[in-house]
Length: 207
Image 1 (tube, rainbow, N blue to C red):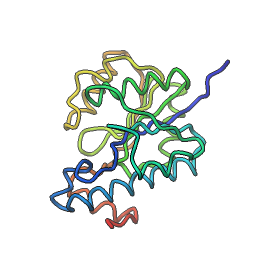
Image 2 (cartoon, one colour):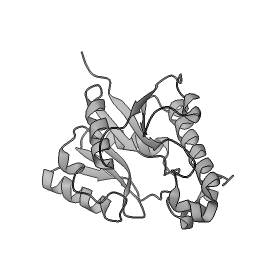
Image 3 (spheres, helix red, strand yellow):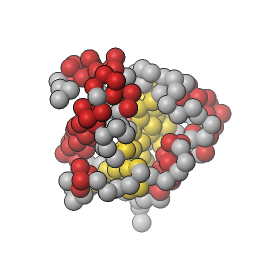
Image 4 (cartoon, one colour):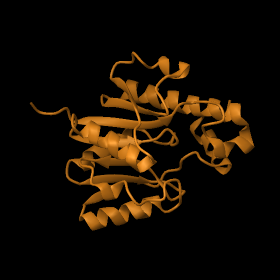
């Protein structure tokens, strides 16, 4: 039987006050930072489930049990999973391997890039038809999206997660693997206080 083609894997922390968007807490306070994270998560899940026909997998840590998450439990096309692994690389590799047992192509993403659109996802999946991978680099040196059809360990091991060289070391891994890959335009993700002003350009209020 042919496997379904496409799935989007979203990596999220439970939206608990004081444990998400910690680098924004000095500017916003813990509760406002957590509320912003919740709204970004809701916004992303809403457009993914309403405007695309991909299977959506929400991979959570440290558990899947949170009142805010329960509203999404019965959403058609959306499944919840628990992240497994010691660091982000291990957690992404585990989720990607799990998803690729059932799907031909997957896209991994977080909830920190409100500039991502359905058009970006469509382009990523289109490129995966003829390429080994797709990368969407972020302005801070990381990446906001990774499109895959396989999960070689070098993509997930030996990187400084959260640092400014992750996109470049991922490119190095792809070169060493002999991959052909494409890159989406540089995007911004919401990690630092100086990123907050860009929310206005998307019409997303802080509160």
